[in-house]
Amino acid sequence: MLDIMLPHYGELKLLKIAVESIMAQTDERWQLTVFDDNPADRQTGIAEYFAALGHPRVQYRRNPQNLGITRNFQQCVDQASAPFMVIMGCDDVLLPRYVERVHALVEAHPEATLVQPGVEVVGADGVSVRTLADATKRRVYAPKINGTLTMTGEELAVSLLRGNWLYFPSLAWRTKQIQAIGFDPQLKVIQDLKLILELVRQGGTLVADEQVVFQYRRHGGSLSASSAVTGNRFSEARAFFLAAAARMDEHGWPRAARAARWHLSSRIHALTMLPAAAKQRSAGSVRVLTRYAFGQGPIG
Image 1 (cartoon, rainbow, N blue to C red):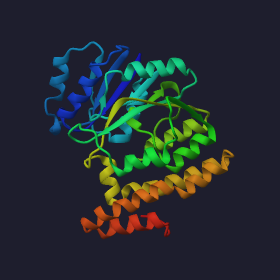
Image 2: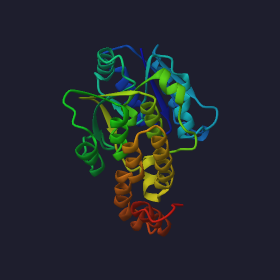
Image 3: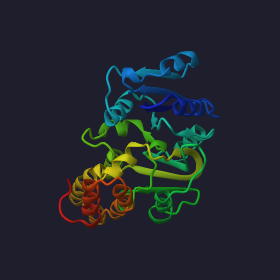
Image 4: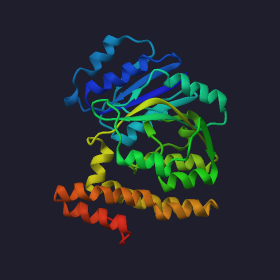
């Protein structure tokens, strides 16, 4: 079985699309648990929707109080029981062969700690889109994948620290390994990269596949998008990369430490956010983004 854990905070419309994409899988070796983190006053028929489904492999749980994104992620990890798990975005879509393909990759690569299947990026309307961020991920930072690629060790750490080309909600994780580490509760946006790098540092192997079986929804309403415009994402990122550099040095991976100190892709991302921050006439955000992009002293 594959545990599909779905931390939810939002509206029912996109959640239904995500859930129905799971139920349409060609391979039935999955079980879905939804953790609804909506406050009581935002309930809009979500519990009723799941009650009406009556699907034996679909569970719906509403948090008694709002946990926030990272604690809800951690709850997903804590409650997983299958050998592999996915922490799916509540607005993303599994194409029909996602579960089938993940099982095939795990069977072909028993050493895998993480599986990155092929991803198509779509907009709010579900139509395929090409954004600068995703084009950069694929053409600049992601390694060339012909069929399936296996990476591990410092090579993988350097690759991800130069530019995180993975799509977190599409990843399949080996459950015991992710449970042994968990998410850093102090992080709100970059928590996935920290966890992945720790898995890599402990000897984890990534299997990346080019077959597209997942749709990642890219839209301006996401936490990462709004945090980027305000500059909050980069205040968090600077402290993270400096700490990552120290950990890589301690581990004897100098190239990875150097990549963390430069964190060039993150600085370029900050530059691309400057026009939006200026348009909002947020002098504080412009200052944070500029300092981060050009490395001019501490951020915050």
